[in-house]
Length: 276
Length: 306
Image 1 (tube, helix red, strand yellow):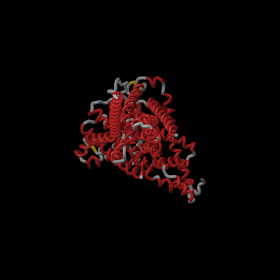
Image 2 (cartoon, chains in turn purple, blue):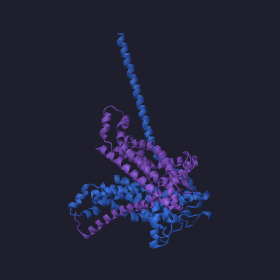
Image 3 (cartoon, chains in turn brown, orange):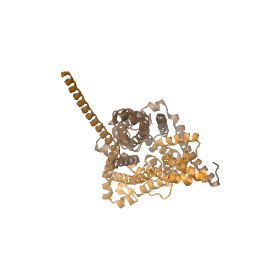
Image 4 (tube, chains in turn green, brown):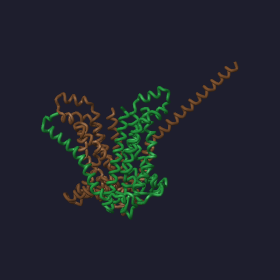
């Protein structure tokens, strides 16, 4: 393990330095935002109405974010799971599968601003859904679809073949094998996929800005405009409305994402235990 | 006699009932398979519809206005109906290139650290940190850039701070998690024997990493770079917050710049008519860049699969 030359020692140093930089940046960002933001997070801030263009509380933004998450996930999850089941359990290699795989990869690579343009053209304008929670949730459900499909695929693939053989050998049909044996074993993986997607929706700004809009009120229904937490932070920072509130909103966003990462890790480790 | 006859009849009836049930069951299974297939096909459908809508809305403008005038035009003056997006194309490419230049070496070395030399305990802290870095919303990066990085640049280098350099810094940080996790997977996929062979020949661990392991993981690392480029060129909100958004070709790294993505997001709110068409056309040009990257990525990953 001893390095033979000075060159080796320098390169080893650079590797450690890079890892240190990566960690350092994360610590820097998180500690900075928390130190500046934690002081402004209060019960009134979390449960108060917005005043004017950004002062006051963030309750409307929390509720709007929640609505967008619920509808997007409710739409994307069943479609994503069924798609993954097809790709893992039914599909035979060929042109069709290749094109589906290429489309899924492409969809994952499309930037959120393009999703925003599309959502604005299709849901907001062509289908007359206006700037609304529904327009945004539909756009976002397409956006998170690749995450759900790919993560669920991995979870299904990790279910041992012997489980399927056992069930089929006992005379169960393919479908009932999938529903009763394969899917239950893959549940933690599917949950991890959903949690990852929730994180993505919370962090999304550009696509939501162009489909949900930015009305700072509690939406009365799914056909109304609203303002999510990320869009709120963007507007506070861009218009220089209130940096104090911006720090606090950023801290809330990081807390949410960190919490989701923690939960995702717990469910994923449940999947690993399952494998043994 | 009668009795057994009745019995036989009942048996036949039962059998045919069972066969019908089986047939219904089979038909049901086929139907469900078709539903699964349709769901899988949603991705293809979505890509097709997104492409169609964006191109149908933005494409015609490019031809009416003139491809050359639009893409190579140096002036963007919506009020005077002058729409040249060369400054935005230059800004997007320069920002992305800079981010790759800074982010890829650091990301790749962090991946090497995780897969080759990190003590397990340290790797167990570093990996979740990288995941968290990936999860932080882009607008938070932009905000951090605005309140921390921009003032630092202004203090040390002058020029106000809102600049191409600030964009490069923020994008480099944002592509780090992508580069780290994809490269790490590629490095881990290199068979153990490669390393053992190299070490047995007397090479040091560091020599083995740089002469054997990294070259063997080349196509996976390239895929990580391409994904990083895609993330950087498509980033919008963070770039708006730190870039200064002046639609001029930058002379220096400290100039204020506006990327293609920023151009769309900033002006879409109030644009109409030809101006709005020009913004959708900007989206088309961005989309073509991304499609090129996707094809490249597909070539790289299918090669890695062989």
